[in-house]
Amino acid sequence: MSRTMPTVRSVKSLRTRVHQWRGTGETVALVPTMGALHDGHLSLVRLARRRADRTIVSIFVNPTQFAPGEDFSSYPRDEKSDKTMLRELGVDLVFAPSAEIMYPPGASTRVTVDGISEGLCGASRLHFFGGVATVVTKLLVQCQADFAIFGEKDYQQLLVIKRLVRDLHIPTKILGGPIVREPDGLAMSSRNAYLTPRERETAPLLYETLRNAAKKLAAGGRIGSTLGQSRAYLKKAGFAVDYVDARDTVTLSPVKGQSAGPIRLFAAVYLGKTRLIDNVPVKPGR
Ligand code: AMP
Image (tube, rainbow, N blue to C red):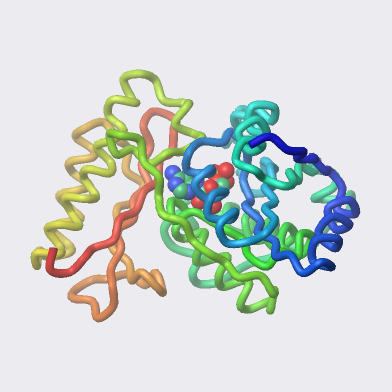
């Protein structure tokens, strides 16, 4: 498919387009990204295309979600190749603002989501969810889309965004898309590009370990010992483990013994300098 796909960089131009579409009764979906697009992102774009008449993809590497010393400056950026992929999928508009547009001089408002942001990735990346919540709130207010689509790859992030949208009465419906994986199971991520060939060979063990743990738990295994074995296995395989944890799927509360609600396993690890995250559902009786 080849049609025009303008790139706009100002909020005013973005709003003008969205206003035109909505004025003729068309629905709008937004897919926020930091670029360096892969099939995981593209699956969310396809979902958006099915769900709404018009699809906007934002590309913005958000400085406020990176701590000093993290990979903000080295984060992969390739707007030209991203746009080629998006044009082929029939995206209607790319919103690629500068940092100055997103954070005008003197900007001093931040969005914080208590509770659900605090464990898992929030515990080791203290700045992260504040940065994400702030930039996503801005994008939602700027775009005024009917739908915004986020990946379950960043499951905690998806729940944080659902919560802030509910709490702030933002009239955009948040939808989640399933994790897209490489053929060997590794969850696709823009950061996979950092892995050395050797690390790339090791990386799929993260998903394999989580899947095995989920199977054990589904068959009645004890949570504490199963998670302990998973951590030990990952360490032995060469990962530095940040966390491997079992949480309630809806509230993210820690699960110690048996849980009433559905459980999900979450992990964050490092291979060399590269942080990888993944999560899998525990399906009872399987
Ligand atoms: P990012 O560019 O990493 O900020 O990701 C933009 C969106 O794509 C977020 O909603 C992510 O959760 C989602 N995403 C990233 N990787 C994947 C994947 N492997 N499968 C599905 N969604 C993904």
